[in-house]
Image (cartoon, rainbow, N blue to C red; front, side):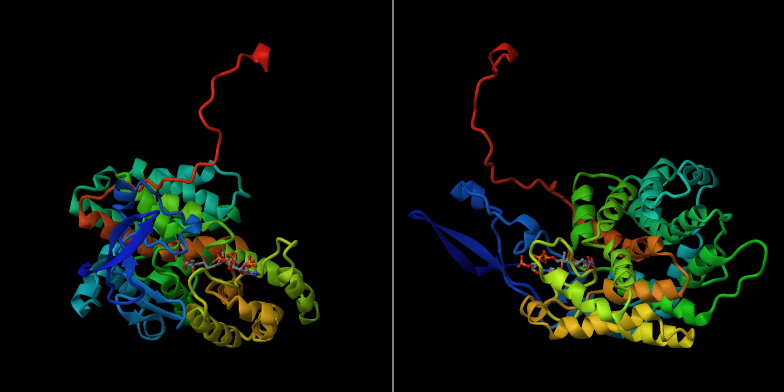
Length: 431
Ligand code: SDX
């Protein structure tokens, strides 16, 4: 959406360029620099994309200063309280909250795609038992394109739709199978009579030797965790999916690329790293030592679960997650969980500390999620896979938005080259 009357003037050593200013519905204006190199023969330079909008989107809006997160205009705290994950999937994918009939039809479509092609089981058995579940998920999700040939053609809207439904439906099954494989238990097939979160919990924790009843407290907590991680604007893994999609890669390959990026401890891997950090701190008495390390420029240690590129206020998801942690742990009778006590005290001390206050470092979505997941019985290695299951709808919705727009240009950034200038080859005898 370009505001034709407004432009930014850029003076480049006597040459003045008029760069159009584009107006958003929410958030900062953007300056369209797409013609900058053609007109001014210069590039912009923004490693980490701290001031760069990579695309136009209508899906998610974040106001980092207010600590606000909207999905198609709906605040995350309202969705977490009143909606549920598959309804949020529908909202992200199609742009509006569904009617009762639309929701029932969508949930039935997802339910009918939760099973994996039986031959895919061989993939899991090819990994070592101690393989990280994220390694397995990256491989198996990419391999979906070897089995579902009827949803690879991205030029066909119907195939794009089928691929989207398949991934929403199959990611929980793949994550659960990766978990079962890592603990040496048999795979548990999905069931059509369970809701999304209950199905996932049963595939993770049921064993053939006895019946498994889903605890409704855990199912609700699981669904809320899925909802809170569903999408988050142009984060690193979503940008990875968009860039992969811009080359025309099939949707399964694009999501596998997103999973690989999410794995990093600076991104989705932070929930596992945060719980391991709380375990290492061990007691409230040791918190000052770690706060000092986090502030020490010469120490690479960072407070996992703290800080965010966009939020310079509380991450609204962390607020909901903290409330959910209190509820779930007290309902499970483990409110005195030492890690929760350490986490709360760590948050209190950090928020009072000038270093964190001056850098606007607040707890993010990963700070409390691990405490809930551990209380639910998951090992830390399953925390990021669960994030990946949830974020699949965000990746798919953003990928679909890009492809639906048509005329997708391949993403191809330039660089600031500071290497050697042109020079002739030197034979080895003369070196
Ligand atoms: C997610 O982008 C998204 O939306 C991501 C996400 C999503 O839903 O997709 O929200 C999910 O990835 C949440 C973030 C999870 N990661 C962590 O919790 C890891 C710990 N956090 C940091 O690694 C860091 O805060 C980042 C990576 C999250 C943000 O990094 P930025 O924006 O690039 O900030 P920075 O690294 O430039 O830090 C700014 C300053 C630096 O100090 P100076 O060099 O200016 O002196 O703050 C310091 C940093 O050293 N700092 C921290 C810190 N985070 C930043 N110091 C101590 N502990 C921290 N956690």
